[in-house]
Amino acid sequence: MTALRAKRSTAPTLSIEKSFASAGHRYVAGCDEVGRGALAGPVSVGIVVVDLGAPSPLRGVRDSKLLPAAEREALVPRIRRWAVASAVGHASAAEVDALGLMAALRAAGSRAWASILETVTPDVVLLDGNHDWLSARSQGVLFGEDDGHDAAAGRADVLGCTAPVHTRIKADLKCLSVAAASVLAKVERDALMVSLAADHPAFGWDVNKGYATEGHRAAIDEAGPSGYHRRTWRLGSSARPDVARRESGG
Image (cartoon, rainbow, N blue to C red; front, top):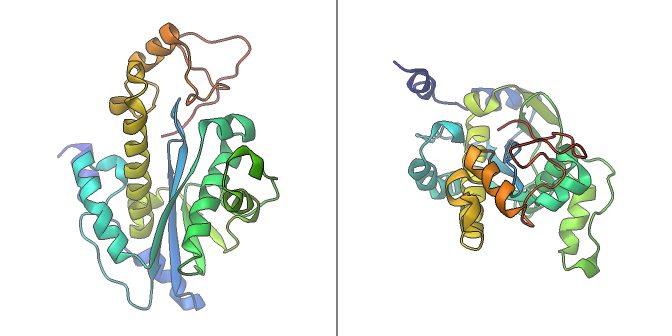
């Protein structure tokens, strides 16, 4: 059995989510991000809320990286019907440059969180990884109302997630709510990159989704970065002396 098939044979469950019931929690939100390591496009954060009072299994869900695109896309309507609430938030490449990666993730997560609050207020959040970049912090508003950005989104950047956040390494492999959140975020971000590729065909975003492939870097060398590239990152095939290498992760 290959390593990939071995991973896919163990489905994530709700056992970790259910462990919060003993503390009186009912609504548990799973949260994950995609696009952290891309050279172009947004960072995107998915949130999926489950009701521990009426939990039910959802077959076929895995960490988004372990599923073919067609399977991820087929899961989206099933996940949205299964969840009490679900949302995806984005932070643009310009925000990654201006705020830094962690604060941009928080901005994206805050937008998703604001959408979740329209339906339900989660009691607790399970966040993939070992660093809490989601919890509310005072970081100011990057864009004002006169810049054409949604004012509510700006306020969400400041308010952020106010529920207790519990980080867990490899939660996207073990926790069903987190795996479901990763699928929603991946499908939505991939679709966005495919749509952008129509106007920027040289970069191959319909295939590489903005990540650092050899062909993507070569295209940047030839055409220069677009408005959707993270200009504070090393983009081309050779390092620029004035730019620190900042990309990381998946």
